[in-house]
Image (tube, rainbow, N blue to C red; front, side):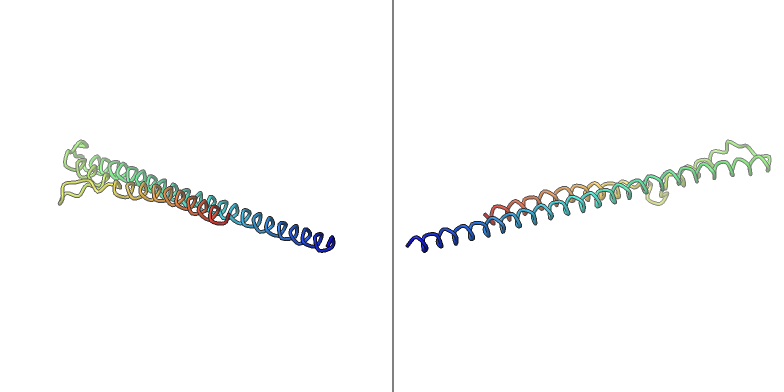
Length: 143
């Protein structure tokens, strides 16, 4: 009888150790998934910020291009002995600099693109929250 009792306790101990090992493995797997999700989220956010900075750089390049066109126009006017402050040429250079569409009378700005970037960042944050909820749900269901 004592041998059967020892065997039962030993078997119970083995089952308890295996159960604890599986739970620890599951916790480790969820922690790895969480770490990968954070790294992926950081990469996505950095790519969106980089895209926004590239758009700002393009806008700055447009400004510089307009400035250079104005300098060129002033040099041509000086060489032709014309008035440098001719209103129409400066007006059209400014419109070209800021991407003004004369047919529709509005600026073709990057406002829509910035709004899209903002929505993408919000979606990225919402995705992170949903992913954390999913990990929490798996953690709770696995108990």
